Amino acid sequence: MDHLPILMATNSIPARFSTVILSQGLEFKTFKNVPFPTQCNALNKISNHNQTTPRRSANFKPSIWHYDYIQSLNSKYKQGTYTEPSQALREEVRMMLCKVENHVYQLDLIDVLQRLGVAYHFKNEIRNLLDNIYDMVDSKKKKDFHATALEYRLLRQHGYDISSDVFFNFLDERDHFKISESVDIEGILSLYEASFYSLEGESILDEARDFTLKILEKYSFRNKSEGNYLSLLIDHSLEIPLHWRAPRWETEWFIHAYETRKTMNPSLLEFAKLDFNILQTIHQDELKNTSRWWRKIGLPEQLNFARDRLVESYFWGMGMSFEPDLEFSRTTLAKVTSLATIIDDLYDVYGTLEELELFTEAIDRWDLNTIDNLPDYLKICFYAIHDFVDELAFEFLKINGDNITPCLKKVWSDLCKAYFTEAKWYYSGYKPSLEEYVENAWISIAIPLMLTHSYFATPYSFQKNELGYLEEYCDIIRFSATITRLINDLRTHKRENEFGDVPKSIQCYMNENGASETNAQEHIKSMLNTTWKKMNKEAHNSSLPPIFIEIAVNLARMSMCMYHDRDGHTIQDPQIKNRISSLIFHPITDTKIRGVTIN
Image (cartoon, rainbow, N blue to C red):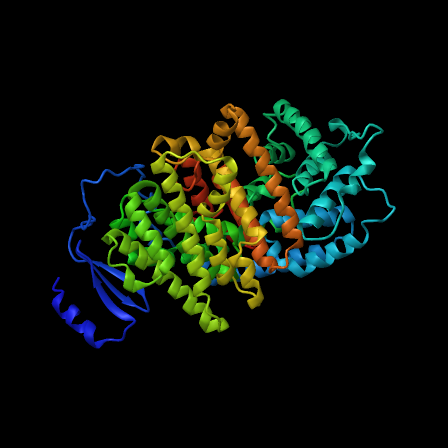
Protein backbone atom coordinates (compact mmCIF):
# COMPACT_ATOMS: atom_id res chain seq x y z
CA MET A 1 0.00 0.00 0.00
CA ASP A 2 1.29 3.47 -0.84
CA HIS A 3 1.51 5.53 2.37
CA LEU A 4 2.78 8.78 0.87
CA PRO A 5 -0.58 10.40 0.01
CA ILE A 6 -1.88 9.64 3.48
CA LEU A 7 1.15 11.16 5.17
CA MET A 8 0.87 14.31 3.08
CA ALA A 9 -2.82 14.61 3.89
CA THR A 10 -2.30 14.77 7.63
CA ASN A 11 -1.23 18.41 7.37
CA SER A 12 -4.58 19.54 6.06
CA ILE A 13 -7.13 17.63 8.16
CA PRO A 14 -8.56 18.40 11.64
CA ALA A 15 -6.45 17.69 14.72
CA ARG A 16 -8.65 14.83 15.87
CA PHE A 17 -8.18 13.03 12.57
CA SER A 18 -4.67 11.77 12.14
CA THR A 19 -2.66 8.87 10.75
CA VAL A 20 -0.10 6.94 12.69
CA ILE A 21 2.25 4.57 10.88
CA LEU A 22 4.07 2.18 13.14
CA SER A 23 7.32 0.56 12.20
CA GLN A 24 5.88 -2.94 11.85
CA GLY A 25 3.71 -1.84 8.94
CA LEU A 26 0.48 -1.04 10.74
CA GLU A 27 -1.40 2.03 9.69
CA PHE A 28 -3.85 3.60 12.11
CA LYS A 29 -6.37 6.12 10.87
CA THR A 30 -8.08 7.74 13.81
CA PHE A 31 -11.21 9.82 13.81
CA LYS A 32 -12.29 11.13 17.20
CA ASN A 33 -9.41 8.97 18.43
CA VAL A 34 -11.15 5.74 17.42
CA PRO A 35 -8.52 3.59 15.65
CA PHE A 36 -9.15 1.61 12.48
CA PRO A 37 -6.13 -0.63 11.90
CA THR A 38 -5.26 -1.63 8.38
CA GLN A 39 -2.70 -4.33 7.82
CA CYS A 40 -0.48 -2.95 5.09
CA ASN A 41 1.46 -6.16 4.73
CA ALA A 42 1.69 -9.57 6.29
CA LEU A 43 3.88 -8.37 9.16
CA ASN A 44 2.21 -8.92 12.50
CA LYS A 45 5.41 -8.95 14.52
CA ILE A 46 6.39 -6.32 17.05
CA SER A 47 9.53 -4.83 15.60
CA ASN A 48 11.00 -1.82 17.38
CA HIS A 49 12.32 -3.49 20.49
CA ASN A 50 14.92 -6.15 21.08
CA GLN A 51 13.56 -9.41 19.70
CA THR A 52 16.16 -11.35 21.75
CA THR A 53 14.62 -10.20 25.02
CA PRO A 54 13.47 -13.30 26.92
CA ARG A 55 9.72 -13.23 27.38
CA ARG A 56 7.30 -15.49 29.16
CA SER A 57 4.55 -17.34 27.38
CA ALA A 58 1.31 -18.75 28.72
CA ASN A 59 0.56 -20.56 25.44
CA PHE A 60 -2.95 -19.19 25.31
CA LYS A 61 -5.17 -20.88 22.76
CA PRO A 62 -6.81 -18.74 20.07
CA SER A 63 -10.49 -18.04 20.37
CA ILE A 64 -12.75 -20.93 19.44
CA TRP A 65 -15.42 -18.46 18.34
CA HIS A 66 -14.40 -17.32 14.87
CA TYR A 67 -15.48 -13.98 13.44
CA ASP A 68 -17.29 -15.51 10.47
CA TYR A 69 -19.26 -17.83 12.72
CA ILE A 70 -20.37 -14.95 14.94
CA GLN A 71 -21.38 -12.87 11.93
CA SER A 72 -23.36 -15.78 10.52
CA LEU A 73 -25.63 -15.98 13.56
CA ASN A 74 -29.27 -15.71 12.59
CA SER A 75 -32.49 -16.70 14.30
CA LYS A 76 -36.06 -16.99 13.16
CA TYR A 77 -37.13 -15.51 16.50
CA LYS A 78 -36.21 -12.08 15.16
CA GLN A 79 -39.24 -12.39 12.92
CA GLY A 80 -42.55 -10.85 13.91
CA THR A 81 -44.15 -14.31 13.83
CA TYR A 82 -43.48 -14.74 17.53
CA THR A 83 -44.39 -11.27 18.76
CA GLU A 84 -48.13 -11.84 19.10
CA PRO A 85 -47.84 -15.26 20.80
CA SER A 86 -45.32 -13.84 23.23
CA GLN A 87 -47.57 -10.92 24.13
CA ALA A 88 -50.56 -13.21 24.62
CA LEU A 89 -48.62 -15.51 26.93
CA ARG A 90 -47.21 -12.56 28.86
CA GLU A 91 -50.70 -11.27 29.57
CA GLU A 92 -51.80 -14.74 30.63
CA VAL A 93 -48.97 -14.89 33.15
CA ARG A 94 -49.80 -11.37 34.33
CA MET A 95 -53.33 -12.54 35.09
CA MET A 96 -51.90 -15.41 37.13
CA LEU A 97 -50.03 -12.92 39.28
CA CYS A 98 -53.12 -10.81 39.77
CA LYS A 99 -55.39 -13.72 40.66
CA VAL A 100 -53.21 -15.81 42.98
CA GLU A 101 -54.24 -15.19 46.60
CA ASN A 102 -52.63 -17.89 48.71
CA HIS A 103 -49.57 -16.44 50.46
CA VAL A 104 -47.28 -19.40 49.72
CA TYR A 105 -48.47 -19.66 46.12
CA GLN A 106 -47.61 -16.00 45.61
CA LEU A 107 -44.10 -16.52 46.93
CA ASP A 108 -43.60 -19.64 44.85
CA LEU A 109 -44.82 -17.94 41.66
CA ILE A 110 -42.48 -14.98 42.17
CA ASP A 111 -39.56 -17.35 42.76
CA VAL A 112 -40.37 -19.34 39.62
CA LEU A 113 -40.75 -16.20 37.49
CA GLN A 114 -37.34 -15.00 38.63
CA ARG A 115 -35.63 -18.30 37.96
CA LEU A 116 -37.30 -18.61 34.55
CA GLY A 117 -35.87 -15.19 33.64
CA VAL A 118 -39.20 -13.46 32.94
CA ALA A 119 -39.77 -11.52 36.18
CA TYR A 120 -38.55 -8.32 34.50
CA HIS A 121 -41.86 -8.19 32.62
CA PHE A 122 -43.81 -7.97 35.88
CA LYS A 123 -41.83 -5.66 38.15
CA ASN A 124 -44.83 -3.64 39.31
CA GLU A 125 -47.00 -6.66 39.98
CA ILE A 126 -44.23 -8.39 41.93
CA ARG A 127 -43.52 -5.26 43.96
CA ASN A 128 -47.19 -4.96 44.90
CA LEU A 129 -47.35 -8.58 46.00
CA LEU A 130 -44.17 -8.27 48.05
CA ASP A 131 -45.42 -5.05 49.67
CA ASN A 132 -48.52 -6.89 50.84
CA ILE A 133 -46.52 -9.89 52.01
CA TYR A 134 -44.10 -7.65 53.93
CA ASP A 135 -46.99 -5.92 55.70
CA MET A 136 -48.05 -9.34 57.00
CA VAL A 137 -44.61 -10.50 58.23
CA ASP A 138 -45.47 -9.85 61.89
CA SER A 139 -48.84 -11.55 61.56
CA LYS A 140 -49.67 -14.04 64.32
CA LYS A 141 -50.71 -16.53 61.66
CA LYS A 142 -48.43 -19.56 61.92
CA LYS A 143 -46.27 -20.26 58.85
CA ASP A 144 -44.53 -23.48 58.01
CA PHE A 145 -40.79 -23.84 57.57
CA HIS A 146 -40.79 -23.61 53.77
CA ALA A 147 -43.03 -20.53 53.66
CA THR A 148 -40.99 -18.70 56.31
CA ALA A 149 -37.67 -19.37 54.59
CA LEU A 150 -38.96 -18.53 51.11
CA GLU A 151 -40.60 -15.35 52.38
CA TYR A 152 -37.40 -14.29 54.14
CA ARG A 153 -35.24 -14.94 51.05
CA LEU A 154 -37.44 -13.09 48.58
CA LEU A 155 -38.04 -10.10 50.85
CA ARG A 156 -34.37 -9.70 51.69
CA GLN A 157 -33.43 -10.14 48.03
CA HIS A 158 -35.73 -7.26 47.11
CA GLY A 159 -34.39 -4.94 49.79
CA TYR A 160 -37.08 -5.26 52.47
CA ASP A 161 -35.96 -4.88 56.08
CA ILE A 162 -36.70 -8.35 57.43
CA SER A 163 -34.94 -9.82 60.44
CA SER A 164 -33.53 -13.31 60.72
CA ASP A 165 -35.37 -13.48 64.05
CA VAL A 166 -38.27 -15.00 62.09
CA PHE A 167 -36.43 -18.33 62.39
CA PHE A 168 -36.27 -18.40 66.20
CA ASN A 169 -39.69 -20.07 66.26
CA PHE A 170 -38.09 -23.16 64.75
CA LEU A 171 -35.39 -23.62 67.44
CA ASP A 172 -35.58 -26.00 70.37
CA GLU A 173 -34.48 -25.27 73.94
CA ARG A 174 -30.85 -25.89 72.92
CA ASP A 175 -31.10 -23.41 70.03
CA HIS A 176 -31.01 -26.17 67.46
CA PHE A 177 -33.42 -26.37 64.55
CA LYS A 178 -36.25 -28.75 65.33
CA ILE A 179 -37.22 -30.14 61.95
CA SER A 180 -36.80 -33.50 60.28
CA GLU A 181 -35.90 -34.06 56.65
CA SER A 182 -38.57 -36.75 56.47
CA VAL A 183 -41.15 -34.10 57.34
CA ASP A 184 -40.08 -31.14 55.22
CA ILE A 185 -37.10 -31.61 52.88
CA GLU A 186 -38.47 -28.74 50.75
CA GLY A 187 -38.38 -26.48 53.82
CA ILE A 188 -34.81 -27.53 54.56
CA LEU A 189 -33.77 -26.63 51.01
CA SER A 190 -35.55 -23.27 51.34
CA LEU A 191 -33.73 -22.53 54.60
CA TYR A 192 -30.40 -23.49 53.04
CA GLU A 193 -30.99 -21.07 50.15
CA ALA A 194 -32.14 -18.34 52.54
CA SER A 195 -28.99 -18.67 54.68
CA PHE A 196 -26.85 -17.21 51.88
CA TYR A 197 -28.60 -13.84 52.31
CA SER A 198 -27.19 -13.53 55.82
CA LEU A 199 -25.33 -10.54 57.19
CA GLU A 200 -22.36 -10.55 59.55
CA GLY A 201 -23.47 -11.38 63.07
CA GLU A 202 -26.57 -13.36 62.09
CA SER A 203 -25.48 -16.50 63.89
CA ILE A 204 -28.86 -18.18 63.46
CA LEU A 205 -28.33 -18.27 59.69
CA ASP A 206 -24.81 -19.67 60.14
CA GLU A 207 -26.39 -22.43 62.21
CA ALA A 208 -29.08 -22.86 59.55
CA ARG A 209 -26.53 -23.32 56.79
CA ASP A 210 -24.52 -25.94 58.70
CA PHE A 211 -27.69 -27.76 59.76
CA THR A 212 -29.31 -27.86 56.33
CA LEU A 213 -26.11 -28.63 54.42
CA LYS A 214 -25.58 -31.90 56.24
CA ILE A 215 -29.15 -33.01 55.66
CA LEU A 216 -29.17 -32.04 51.98
CA GLU A 217 -25.88 -33.82 51.32
CA LYS A 218 -27.26 -37.03 52.87
CA TYR A 219 -30.48 -36.68 50.89
CA SER A 220 -28.57 -36.11 47.66
CA PHE A 221 -26.39 -39.17 48.26
CA ARG A 222 -29.39 -41.41 48.91
CA ASN A 223 -31.42 -40.13 45.97
CA LYS A 224 -28.79 -39.85 43.23
CA SER A 225 -30.85 -41.79 40.70
CA GLU A 226 -34.20 -40.12 41.40
CA GLY A 227 -33.99 -37.29 38.86
CA ASN A 228 -37.20 -35.69 40.12
CA TYR A 229 -37.72 -31.95 40.43
CA LEU A 230 -36.79 -31.64 44.09
CA SER A 231 -33.68 -33.80 43.71
CA LEU A 232 -32.57 -31.66 40.77
CA LEU A 233 -32.99 -28.49 42.83
CA ILE A 234 -31.05 -29.91 45.76
CA ASP A 235 -28.09 -31.09 43.67
CA HIS A 236 -28.07 -27.79 41.82
CA SER A 237 -28.07 -25.81 45.06
CA LEU A 238 -25.30 -27.89 46.61
CA GLU A 239 -23.15 -27.14 43.58
CA ILE A 240 -23.70 -23.35 43.80
CA PRO A 241 -26.47 -21.78 45.93
CA LEU A 242 -29.10 -19.76 44.11
CA HIS A 243 -27.98 -16.41 45.58
CA TRP A 244 -24.52 -16.96 44.11
CA ARG A 245 -25.77 -17.77 40.60
CA ALA A 246 -26.01 -15.18 37.84
CA PRO A 247 -29.67 -14.89 36.76
CA ARG A 248 -29.13 -15.56 33.05
CA TRP A 249 -26.84 -18.48 33.86
CA GLU A 250 -29.65 -19.90 35.99
CA THR A 251 -32.48 -19.35 33.49
CA GLU A 252 -31.57 -21.87 30.82
CA TRP A 253 -30.97 -24.61 33.40
CA PHE A 254 -34.15 -23.89 35.33
CA ILE A 255 -36.38 -23.90 32.24
CA HIS A 256 -35.42 -27.53 31.67
CA ALA A 257 -35.71 -28.38 35.38
CA TYR A 258 -39.16 -26.76 35.60
CA GLU A 259 -40.39 -29.11 32.87
CA THR A 260 -40.02 -32.00 35.35
CA ARG A 261 -42.16 -30.34 38.04
CA LYS A 262 -45.49 -32.07 38.56
CA THR A 263 -47.29 -28.74 39.15
CA MET A 264 -45.61 -27.08 36.16
CA ASN A 265 -47.78 -24.46 34.46
CA PRO A 266 -47.64 -25.07 30.66
CA SER A 267 -48.37 -21.44 29.72
CA LEU A 268 -45.66 -20.14 31.99
CA LEU A 269 -43.16 -22.66 30.63
CA GLU A 270 -44.06 -21.78 27.02
CA PHE A 271 -43.70 -18.07 27.74
CA ALA A 272 -40.30 -18.57 29.39
CA LYS A 273 -38.97 -20.54 26.42
CA LEU A 274 -40.21 -18.06 23.86
CA ASP A 275 -38.94 -15.07 25.83
CA PHE A 276 -35.56 -16.76 26.18
CA ASN A 277 -35.32 -17.29 22.43
CA ILE A 278 -36.41 -13.75 21.56
CA LEU A 279 -33.95 -12.23 24.02
CA GLN A 280 -31.25 -14.46 22.59
CA THR A 281 -31.64 -12.80 19.18
CA ILE A 282 -31.01 -9.41 20.81
CA HIS A 283 -27.87 -10.74 22.48
CA GLN A 284 -26.67 -12.25 19.20
CA ASP A 285 -27.00 -8.93 17.38
CA GLU A 286 -25.08 -7.19 20.15
CA LEU A 287 -22.30 -9.77 19.96
CA LYS A 288 -22.11 -9.41 16.18
CA ASN A 289 -21.75 -5.63 16.46
CA THR A 290 -19.14 -5.92 19.19
CA SER A 291 -17.27 -8.52 17.16
CA ARG A 292 -17.04 -6.08 14.26
CA TRP A 293 -15.57 -3.45 16.60
CA TRP A 294 -13.07 -5.97 17.96
CA ARG A 295 -11.95 -6.95 14.49
CA LYS A 296 -11.67 -3.33 13.43
CA ILE A 297 -9.19 -2.41 16.17
CA GLY A 298 -7.28 -5.62 15.43
CA LEU A 299 -5.58 -6.22 18.79
CA PRO A 300 -5.65 -10.05 18.75
CA GLU A 301 -3.88 -10.18 15.38
CA GLN A 302 -1.24 -7.63 16.40
CA LEU A 303 -0.66 -8.86 19.96
CA ASN A 304 -0.78 -12.60 19.53
CA PHE A 305 0.81 -13.29 22.92
CA ALA A 306 -2.48 -12.31 24.61
CA ARG A 307 -5.89 -13.95 25.02
CA ASP A 308 -8.60 -13.20 22.49
CA ARG A 309 -11.69 -13.62 24.63
CA LEU A 310 -14.34 -11.36 23.12
CA VAL A 311 -17.20 -13.88 23.38
CA GLU A 312 -16.35 -14.71 26.98
CA SER A 313 -16.14 -10.96 27.70
CA TYR A 314 -19.60 -10.43 26.24
CA PHE A 315 -20.80 -13.39 28.30
CA TRP A 316 -19.70 -11.55 31.46
CA GLY A 317 -21.73 -8.51 30.42
CA MET A 318 -24.79 -10.61 29.61
CA GLY A 319 -24.53 -12.30 32.98
CA MET A 320 -24.47 -8.93 34.72
CA SER A 321 -27.51 -7.51 32.93
CA PHE A 322 -29.57 -9.47 30.40
CA GLU A 323 -32.67 -7.27 30.01
CA PRO A 324 -33.31 -5.90 26.49
CA ASP A 325 -32.98 -2.21 27.47
CA LEU A 326 -29.42 -2.66 28.80
CA GLU A 327 -27.70 -3.21 25.45
CA PHE A 328 -25.18 -0.38 25.86
CA SER A 329 -24.15 -1.71 29.26
CA ARG A 330 -23.51 -5.20 27.88
CA THR A 331 -21.55 -4.09 24.83
CA THR A 332 -19.49 -1.62 26.85
CA LEU A 333 -18.66 -4.36 29.36
CA ALA A 334 -17.65 -6.69 26.53
CA LYS A 335 -15.28 -4.08 25.12
CA VAL A 336 -13.70 -3.06 28.40
CA THR A 337 -13.28 -6.69 29.52
CA SER A 338 -11.66 -7.65 26.20
CA LEU A 339 -9.24 -4.74 26.48
CA ALA A 340 -8.45 -5.48 30.12
CA THR A 341 -7.72 -9.12 29.23
CA ILE A 342 -5.13 -7.98 26.69
CA ILE A 343 -3.53 -5.55 29.15
CA ASP A 344 -3.48 -8.20 31.87
CA ASP A 345 -1.49 -10.51 29.59
CA LEU A 346 0.77 -7.64 28.63
CA TYR A 347 1.82 -7.31 32.29
CA ASP A 348 1.65 -10.99 33.26
CA VAL A 349 3.22 -12.58 30.22
CA TYR A 350 4.95 -10.40 27.65
CA GLY A 351 6.29 -7.05 28.82
CA THR A 352 9.66 -6.49 30.45
CA LEU A 353 9.73 -4.58 33.71
CA GLU A 354 11.27 -1.54 32.00
CA GLU A 355 8.62 -1.55 29.26
CA LEU A 356 5.83 -1.98 31.79
CA GLU A 357 7.08 0.95 33.83
CA LEU A 358 7.02 3.17 30.74
CA PHE A 359 3.52 2.01 29.84
CA THR A 360 2.19 2.53 33.38
CA GLU A 361 3.57 6.08 33.40
CA ALA A 362 2.05 6.76 29.97
CA ILE A 363 -1.40 5.61 31.09
CA ASP A 364 -1.11 7.75 34.22
CA ARG A 365 -0.15 10.85 32.17
CA TRP A 366 -2.85 10.11 29.56
CA ASP A 367 -1.12 12.26 26.97
CA LEU A 368 -0.81 11.20 23.33
CA ASN A 369 2.14 13.51 22.91
CA THR A 370 4.29 11.66 25.44
CA ILE A 371 4.27 8.09 24.16
CA ASP A 372 7.06 8.29 21.59
CA ASN A 373 9.41 6.32 23.86
CA LEU A 374 7.03 3.36 24.03
CA PRO A 375 7.67 0.22 21.95
CA ASP A 376 5.20 -0.10 19.10
CA TYR A 377 3.17 -2.87 20.73
CA LEU A 378 2.61 -0.64 23.75
CA LYS A 379 1.62 2.27 21.54
CA ILE A 380 -1.04 0.01 20.02
CA CYS A 381 -2.34 -0.77 23.50
CA PHE A 382 -2.28 2.86 24.55
CA TYR A 383 -4.21 4.03 21.50
CA ALA A 384 -6.81 1.29 21.96
CA ILE A 385 -7.49 2.26 25.59
CA HIS A 386 -7.32 6.01 25.00
CA ASP A 387 -9.69 5.93 22.07
CA PHE A 388 -12.14 3.59 23.78
CA VAL A 389 -12.34 5.95 26.77
CA ASP A 390 -12.72 8.96 24.48
CA GLU A 391 -15.61 7.29 22.67
CA LEU A 392 -17.47 6.38 25.87
CA ALA A 393 -16.85 9.80 27.43
CA PHE A 394 -18.07 11.53 24.27
CA GLU A 395 -21.32 9.51 24.30
CA PHE A 396 -21.86 10.30 27.97
CA LEU A 397 -21.18 14.00 27.40
CA LYS A 398 -23.78 14.13 24.63
CA ILE A 399 -26.46 12.61 26.85
CA ASN A 400 -25.65 13.99 30.31
CA GLY A 401 -23.45 17.03 29.69
CA ASP A 402 -20.71 15.86 32.08
CA ASN A 403 -17.09 15.05 31.36
CA ILE A 404 -16.28 11.63 32.80
CA THR A 405 -12.83 11.28 31.19
CA PRO A 406 -10.95 11.98 34.47
CA CYS A 407 -12.87 9.22 36.25
CA LEU A 408 -12.29 6.69 33.45
CA LYS A 409 -8.65 7.70 33.15
CA LYS A 410 -8.17 7.15 36.89
CA VAL A 411 -9.62 3.65 36.88
CA TRP A 412 -7.40 2.58 33.96
CA SER A 413 -4.39 4.14 35.68
CA ASP A 414 -5.18 2.38 38.95
CA LEU A 415 -5.51 -0.93 37.15
CA CYS A 416 -2.16 -0.58 35.40
CA LYS A 417 -0.49 0.49 38.65
CA ALA A 418 -1.88 -2.61 40.35
CA TYR A 419 -0.63 -4.77 37.46
CA PHE A 420 2.79 -3.10 37.70
CA THR A 421 2.98 -3.72 41.44
CA GLU A 422 2.48 -7.43 40.76
CA ALA A 423 5.10 -7.31 37.99
CA LYS A 424 7.61 -5.78 40.41
CA TRP A 425 6.82 -8.49 42.96
CA TYR A 426 7.39 -11.15 40.33
CA TYR A 427 10.69 -9.83 39.00
CA SER A 428 12.10 -9.20 42.50
CA GLY A 429 10.84 -12.49 43.93
CA TYR A 430 8.98 -10.61 46.65
CA LYS A 431 6.39 -12.55 48.67
CA PRO A 432 3.64 -10.22 49.89
CA SER A 433 1.56 -10.86 53.00
CA LEU A 434 -2.03 -11.93 52.44
CA GLU A 435 -3.29 -8.50 53.47
CA GLU A 436 -0.82 -6.73 51.18
CA TYR A 437 -1.71 -9.02 48.30
CA VAL A 438 -5.49 -8.64 48.63
CA GLU A 439 -5.27 -4.86 48.97
CA ASN A 440 -3.67 -4.74 45.52
CA ALA A 441 -5.37 -7.76 43.96
CA TRP A 442 -8.99 -6.61 44.30
CA ILE A 443 -8.00 -3.81 41.92
CA SER A 444 -5.87 -5.97 39.60
CA ILE A 445 -8.81 -8.35 39.05
CA ALA A 446 -10.25 -5.45 36.96
CA ILE A 447 -13.67 -5.40 38.64
CA PRO A 448 -13.42 -1.70 39.64
CA LEU A 449 -12.61 -1.01 35.99
CA MET A 450 -15.61 -2.99 34.76
CA LEU A 451 -18.08 -1.56 37.25
CA THR A 452 -16.97 2.04 36.73
CA HIS A 453 -17.55 1.74 33.01
CA SER A 454 -20.81 -0.09 33.63
CA TYR A 455 -22.01 2.74 35.86
CA PHE A 456 -21.68 5.22 33.00
CA ALA A 457 -23.07 2.83 30.39
CA THR A 458 -26.25 1.94 32.30
CA PRO A 459 -29.35 4.09 31.80
CA TYR A 460 -30.74 5.79 34.90
CA SER A 461 -30.96 9.30 36.35
CA PHE A 462 -27.31 10.30 36.70
CA GLN A 463 -26.32 12.14 39.89
CA LYS A 464 -23.04 14.06 39.84
CA ASN A 465 -22.51 13.62 43.57
CA GLU A 466 -22.18 9.86 43.03
CA LEU A 467 -18.87 10.29 41.19
CA GLY A 468 -17.03 10.45 44.50
CA TYR A 469 -18.30 6.98 45.43
CA LEU A 470 -16.91 5.63 42.17
CA GLU A 471 -13.54 7.33 42.34
CA GLU A 472 -13.04 6.12 45.91
CA TYR A 473 -14.25 2.61 44.97
CA CYS A 474 -17.23 2.37 47.29
CA ASP A 475 -17.82 -0.82 49.26
CA ILE A 476 -20.17 -2.43 46.75
CA ILE A 477 -17.34 -2.27 44.16
CA ARG A 478 -14.71 -3.42 46.64
CA PHE A 479 -16.76 -6.40 47.82
CA SER A 480 -17.68 -7.50 44.30
CA ALA A 481 -14.01 -7.27 43.34
CA THR A 482 -12.81 -9.13 46.41
CA ILE A 483 -15.26 -11.98 45.82
CA THR A 484 -14.09 -12.26 42.22
CA ARG A 485 -10.43 -12.19 43.24
CA LEU A 486 -10.82 -14.88 45.91
CA ILE A 487 -12.81 -17.31 43.78
CA ASN A 488 -10.43 -16.67 40.88
CA ASP A 489 -7.45 -17.51 43.09
CA LEU A 490 -9.08 -20.69 44.37
CA ARG A 491 -9.48 -22.00 40.82
CA THR A 492 -6.48 -20.57 38.92
CA HIS A 493 -3.52 -20.38 41.29
CA LYS A 494 -1.95 -23.67 40.21
CA ARG A 495 -2.17 -22.97 36.47
CA GLU A 496 -0.87 -19.41 36.81
CA ASN A 497 2.05 -20.53 38.95
CA GLU A 498 3.05 -22.99 36.24
CA PHE A 499 3.86 -20.25 33.73
CA GLY A 500 5.25 -17.88 36.34
CA ASP A 501 3.19 -15.41 38.32
CA VAL A 502 3.14 -13.71 41.69
CA PRO A 503 1.90 -15.78 44.65
CA LYS A 504 -1.88 -15.75 44.88
CA SER A 505 -3.90 -15.45 48.07
CA ILE A 506 -3.53 -19.18 48.84
CA GLN A 507 0.27 -19.09 48.53
CA CYS A 508 0.42 -15.83 50.50
CA TYR A 509 -1.45 -17.45 53.39
CA MET A 510 0.75 -20.55 53.20
CA ASN A 511 3.95 -18.48 53.17
CA GLU A 512 2.79 -16.26 56.00
CA ASN A 513 1.44 -18.97 58.31
CA GLY A 514 3.25 -22.13 57.31
CA ALA A 515 -0.14 -23.63 56.51
CA SER A 516 -0.92 -26.53 54.21
CA GLU A 517 -2.59 -25.86 50.88
CA THR A 518 -5.81 -27.44 52.17
CA ASN A 519 -5.91 -25.19 55.23
CA ALA A 520 -5.09 -22.16 53.08
CA GLN A 521 -7.96 -22.97 50.74
CA GLU A 522 -10.34 -23.26 53.70
CA HIS A 523 -9.18 -19.88 54.97
CA ILE A 524 -9.79 -18.25 51.58
CA LYS A 525 -13.25 -19.86 51.43
CA SER A 526 -13.98 -18.38 54.86
CA MET A 527 -12.89 -14.96 53.59
CA LEU A 528 -15.16 -15.47 50.58
CA ASN A 529 -18.19 -16.23 52.78
CA THR A 530 -17.50 -13.22 54.99
CA THR A 531 -17.20 -10.92 51.98
CA TRP A 532 -20.53 -12.18 50.66
CA LYS A 533 -22.15 -11.20 53.97
CA LYS A 534 -20.63 -7.74 53.67
CA MET A 535 -21.87 -7.53 50.10
CA ASN A 536 -25.38 -8.48 51.23
CA LYS A 537 -25.40 -5.65 53.77
CA GLU A 538 -24.01 -3.08 51.35
CA ALA A 539 -26.49 -4.07 48.64
CA HIS A 540 -29.24 -3.46 51.19
CA ASN A 541 -27.92 -0.09 52.45
CA SER A 542 -26.22 1.55 49.47
CA SER A 543 -27.56 4.86 48.14
CA LEU A 544 -26.34 4.11 44.61
CA PRO A 545 -28.94 3.30 41.90
CA PRO A 546 -30.55 -0.12 42.46
CA ILE A 547 -29.78 -1.16 38.89
CA PHE A 548 -26.06 -0.53 39.47
CA ILE A 549 -26.17 -2.42 42.76
CA GLU A 550 -27.75 -5.39 40.99
CA ILE A 551 -25.08 -5.29 38.27
CA ALA A 552 -22.32 -5.24 40.90
CA VAL A 553 -23.83 -8.23 42.71
CA ASN A 554 -24.38 -10.05 39.42
CA LEU A 555 -20.73 -9.54 38.55
CA ALA A 556 -19.74 -11.35 41.75
CA ARG A 557 -22.27 -14.05 40.85
CA MET A 558 -20.77 -14.41 37.37
CA SER A 559 -17.34 -14.94 38.90
CA MET A 560 -18.74 -17.74 41.10
CA CYS A 561 -19.98 -19.46 37.94
CA MET A 562 -17.10 -18.69 35.57
CA TYR A 563 -14.50 -19.83 38.11
CA HIS A 564 -16.51 -22.61 39.75
CA ASP A 565 -14.47 -25.49 38.30
CA ARG A 566 -11.61 -23.71 36.58
CA ASP A 567 -10.79 -20.45 34.80
CA GLY A 568 -13.73 -20.27 32.43
CA HIS A 569 -12.52 -16.97 30.99
CA THR A 570 -9.19 -18.40 29.85
CA ILE A 571 -9.60 -22.14 29.34
CA GLN A 572 -12.18 -22.81 26.65
CA ASP A 573 -13.13 -26.28 27.81
CA PRO A 574 -16.28 -28.13 26.69
CA GLN A 575 -18.21 -27.14 29.83
CA ILE A 576 -17.91 -23.38 29.36
CA LYS A 577 -18.24 -23.76 25.59
CA ASN A 578 -21.53 -25.61 26.01
CA ARG A 579 -22.85 -23.07 28.50
CA ILE A 580 -22.03 -20.12 26.22
CA SER A 581 -23.53 -21.96 23.24
CA SER A 582 -26.77 -22.70 25.07
CA LEU A 583 -27.18 -19.12 26.28
CA ILE A 584 -26.08 -17.16 23.21
CA PHE A 585 -26.06 -19.36 20.13
CA HIS A 586 -28.69 -22.09 20.37
CA PRO A 587 -32.40 -21.48 21.06
CA ILE A 588 -34.50 -23.72 23.26
CA THR A 589 -36.48 -26.07 21.03
CA ASP A 590 -39.15 -28.78 21.13
CA THR A 591 -42.20 -26.92 22.29
CA LYS A 592 -45.33 -25.38 20.85
CA ILE A 593 -46.27 -21.74 21.24
CA ARG A 594 -49.90 -20.92 20.54
CA GLY A 595 -49.93 -23.00 17.38
CA VAL A 596 -46.38 -21.99 16.34
CA THR A 597 -44.05 -25.00 16.56
CA ILE A 598 -40.47 -24.41 17.70
CA ASN A 599 -38.05 -26.94 16.33
